[in-house]
Image 1 (spheres, one colour):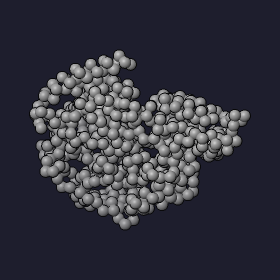
Image 2 (cartoon, rainbow, N blue to C red; image 1 turned 135 degrees about the horizontal axis):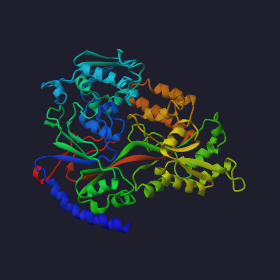
Image 3 (spheres, one colour; image 1 turned 90 degrees about the horizontal axis):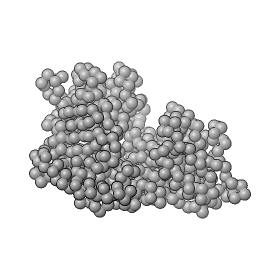
Image 4 (cartoon, helix red, strand yellow; image 1 turned 180 degrees about the vertical axis):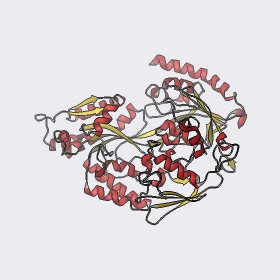
Length: 549
């Protein structure tokens, strides 16, 4: 390992020269360069199901609304909107200066976006023929592709009617799935629309050699401005597809990439100190950005005692579940296993970054080993009557975290065994309610507390829904349904906290930590920001070299 560090330091010295050279290759052009290790296969926004595809689609397309870095809903193609008193009808008033990217399908004419384009795009998203993984976004909207729930009142007014009130819906419309696309291009290119995208975004696709390189170029007709300057500032975005994360790190260190997203085990100790600070030798050329990320990592406990696997587990006893929650040190876990990246999970399922998260709340669990031992004793277990073994199922990626939890819980009197299985097997067995104790995580589908609390709504039992623990509480269910009827965010926030507290009191989960998004950025990059959904927004980013100050 020491030899690797010396080698990386040597590469960094070489990188200073490479960085200087690269910045002058396009003295009059601002080109942002990054790597996408997972690759890209489809630039149709209806298939933007993961971060890699969402990042690119966010540069190519727009929807009715967008989220700012604080996750507030802001106008995009819709200038403003009105929600009916019953919360079921949304009327959007569209801008009249938004045009699709120049494309031969428009025969040399500029094609303006009108309300009918959103009718087409949303019905296409919902259509079984499209088979979009994002069709669920419109489950509360469109009964069929030919339905009247989405309609154009005229060229600049769009109306969407819901089956029932659902306050998070507006934020859901910010997802890339809901981007507007032109019917002419979809009809002409068919399946090839995936590699011939036509959108309205700040950039358009200039060139793509699959698995090698992609270039996005500035859209000269983009409709958004920043202090009188038409966005974007960048002339182009260059994307490489290096699979090995260490290779991407080396390219970043040499100055051939402008930012690095996330923290891979291969280089985390090289870049960061134990307390999460950027190491000194990298501070001259790079800076680090960190933000709460809407991802809660936890251990799930099957609490449905109508199931045999739960009946036979000591975890059916609430005192045992609480003892596990008190029995390990989350602060130490974050420091030594994640180099300070992440927030110890001492509260509920709702993560930082959402308004209902409250760092001062009284519910949740911290490290209290004496209390854990007392709870075990109160449950009837002792040296003469040890608790039966409890198996924690996990995947290889999380073995280090689970071994840490295992070690500390065993120190307070538990007998935790680890069962390491493939990702697919864990997902399948979890959905089939065959695992009494399992590692899990929940990344927000949309930025709203309801998305997290839906994990504990009794009508969402697996396999149809995401309630993997089979938690059930009439009080919780009543609050869940009540929250959907409240228009004011402050009122919903209060109910969300009640639900989070009620659930944590019953302890169907053990919160490990709230994730954080981290980015390492070259100092020549200005205007890069972070947000809790870790979306990549490049329309206000600049590359400041000596030639373009």
